[in-house]
Image (cartoon, rainbow, N blue to C red; front, side, top):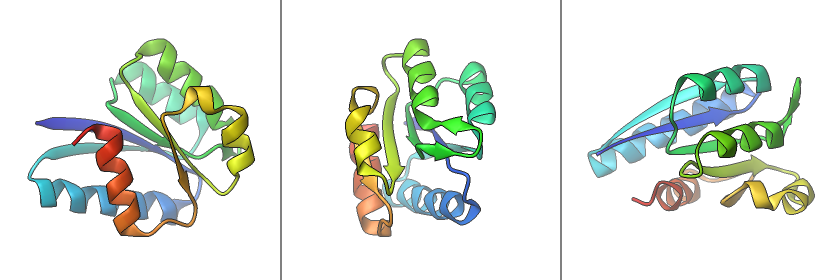
Amino acid sequence: MSKRILIVDDIDFIVEFEEKVIDSLSKDLSIKIQVDKSNSVKDALANIDKHHYDAMVIDINLPDGSGIDIAKKAQDKSKDTRIAVLTIYPKEYEEHNAYFDAFFKKPILPTSYKQHIRKLLHI
């Protein structure tokens, strides 16, 4: 089994945290999870054009726009991509929850993040 996930956040240490937790989960479950990273809306949209993703974890507030635009593009490309928002702004999620399959609240512990990713990826 192999999965591909896109992480979108403009804070480098959050992206590193997510990548390390996903790598740990991959090892725990003995499955391959390819992690792609983006720090902006522009880069995320380019990645969506190039690849199919099983899942995405997107921050809503990015320097060059909104994570909602990323979710819309991902849904337009594939209804199979599961999308989560990782944010400290639950109100923005609630206003746009039709574009997301899950809500992860910052800050998040590694064990909770792993559980959420398992559900998101259906593993």
